[in-house]
Length: 210
Length: 210
DNA sequence: ACCAATCTGGTAGTTACTATCACTGAGGTA
DNA sequence: TACCTCAGTGATAGTAACTACCAGATTGGT
Image (cartoon, rainbow over all chains, first blue to last red; front, side, top):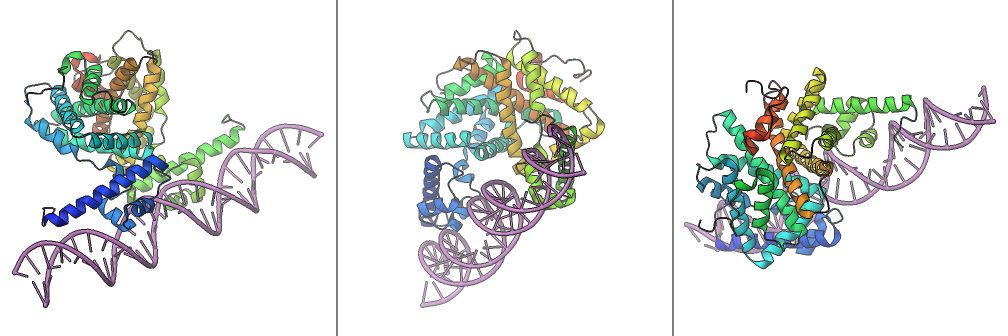
């Protein structure tokens, strides 16, 4: 299916996709999201509007494409089930943020640009929050708790949604600071403000000993 | 401006608005949201498509129109500033839910129908979550904390967003139960699952036997 | 060299939403 | 009663985000 049938095919596809998204974010930032049409993006990227829709199902996905969900879910599944829910989820979120923002500088700037668009554009903000909702489901699945018990699942959903909401607050603050403050620390601060000081370890980058 | 210039004018306007929304929710439930066009809704309500757009700026608003935000904000502003943030916000949310679901039976059923649509339809779910985001801003304002201090505001946003996320989890569960379980108790349970048992008082009609 | 699969482009259509102009009828005043 | 104002409504035409449906081009494997 989506395997690397041939390295060249997959590489070219990934490259056009990256190019389209880069031009899209640039144009949206310059002219505004609503004032930029999909046709504009296609022309800037040197492809047809059809090709844009093949790579990104909706105009919003031009900004929102993101698969950090798997990253978070993996870390949660690997965490100890002995800790309280909020601590497990919170640590996974902080770890994931450490990985994502420590990557490269250009990637961080691109993430910031996308985040600014998500926050300021209603349509993007709405769909982004809905994506977080999907991530919540993935987190609950990864927790591995007894899914048969409705009460357990209910508690897991409540905890996961609350953690993600706190993280979103940290993301907004991070974007407002233009990424100057370290994101993992902000997430820890948001979690502490919501759940109390004791719930997260205030370590420098979360838990480096992973 | 929006005063009752004449009682008759305002009454007729409110009536058509109510009729349009009722037909919209009915049609969306019967045929599905995407399969129902705004023109369909207009015809069912006996008005022109233009009139629908005059009353509801977007198709989503046909389901999402809601002004419970003011209710919550008022209760928060009236609450004691001595309690922890999460407790203040949580109590306000539970109180508001008690008021809303205790009203009348028809109103409760209508709320349930709208909630089911919001949960199952991606476009509605996304915009509803974004509305919650706006409600979060209102809650932070109502808290009356020192808005000049960025750290205080940050903590308030984190707490408010986490509380609203937990409430949303309770709303989903409530809709899944077709409103059989009392909503205020569910909200209290969700808050307890996220923030710990001690954070919410089980209140007047919270969870008597749990 | 051939076949299969994938990537891409074009055309036409649906639908949400907007801008603009014209009509109707209610409310207040003389 | 007669008149004026204006909110509410409607029709038309237009933009833009998508969605089939079909056709050509390029790559990979045999």
